[in-house]
Length: 563
Ligand code: NAP
Image (spheres, rainbow, N blue to C red):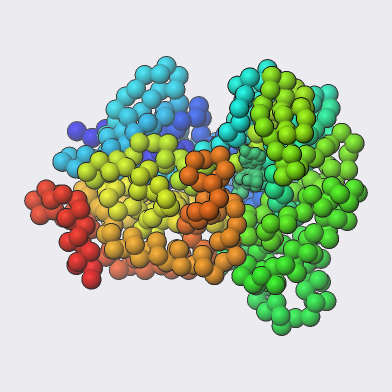
């Protein structure tokens, strides 16, 4: 007897919408969430300055007109407390909490071929007890950036004061006044936190290994009148997001970079630099992403803007990336980040010159000297995209682990299914359309597709589904192929699976995590798959014919059939 027909793992933005769709279908389902409450990214990341870099009104769910009409986004790029309130409001409005089990860490998910079900081992984080749960279908909504990573430095447990990763910023306010604070890292998170706390701490020392290209967020309040106008335009706004490659309102400038004069280019860039949000990245010339010369010219433009904002030319040069061009890594957006370095209490340490050697009882040591701190903040990023999967012992057919399958890179069918792992869905998985888009727009696409698929499967009485090995290869080749056009393939960032703190993810090996074809193309492909009756997914084949064979033999048979 199954405990649930579907178990959803993760109660973040994706899990919340997924359970809403399942509840509407009347499926017996539960959501397991490691945290003490819902919200995912917006539950955990409570560091000062945490906020959207998507326009708030494009980040909210689009599925309910009533919800759209009643919610007032107060800022163009809303902050973490408001975002968490929003997600709680959604869960309460649609009575979704009753499906959620919090403090529930999924340790293992093992496929039982005989019974055609998943067996989950779940630990109660409050009392340490474990329980087993079974379900026919499992849906992974684990989040792309939910596995924080810390440096591998000696002495990290020796530091006497508070130290934490930004993801685990304490829920209670942290007293910063007069404190000597270290921030390690200069990614999107650090850029938000540094700018926000620079005038609230005693001394702030930023430890930078490599700078990032960053441009102004240009946030602002949304008045009642503006919000009323946004509500009237919601259909138009979501249609624009659906048309754009990134799922944002920003659409690339269709003019060729070389077709317009340098003056025209500068005019566009000046406008974009002062405009809100990702326009500077996504409403720019398309060649910025693919052409080294175009990219270098624009990078130099941004470098010049940084020089204008940072008073000390030596500090400005350190804040300008020299190892990669603009936008080939995920672009952080900032609010007076560069001006923070003009403050006398803010110091920049270049780890390229003097690397960190260890953490001491009183602070940090570099090859040059010791630094004393009251608080150390690690803004050191995430084991992105596959990290959260790797932390669960996921075993599919014949006990094969997903961790092993994805050890060198990952492979998937449409970013939503994996061969060898039947009855397993990832609406926002690696290589899906959501990893590189305005996340909720991608999530709604993935959840809708997965739910429609499950609806179909249930109607047909299917108890087992699995994409073919050949289809998975085709999709993965397609994803890999698209990297060859992108300058991004050379970048050391989470889009290519680089993380110096995760063994095996250091420099050198590109991981093909992200679908680079843009949202419209992705949606067309997955909709066609559905319209064609999911031809690449093997549905409910008889136990006698296939499931009693060793899996490798079944793979060979499927591959032969595909040829
Ligand atoms: P990140 O972009 O991976 O940045 C991590 C930073 O820590 C990098 O500067 C990295 O330096 C540094 N670092 C890592 N390990 C280190 C070590 N051992 N020693 C010294 N420095 C080390 O991570 P993130 O800033 O958390 O951002 C991740 C993603 O989260 C973003 O790209 C974005 O997608 C999302 N995010 C979004 C928002 C938003 O506005 N909505 C805000 C924050 C984050 P290297 O570059 O040299 O490795």
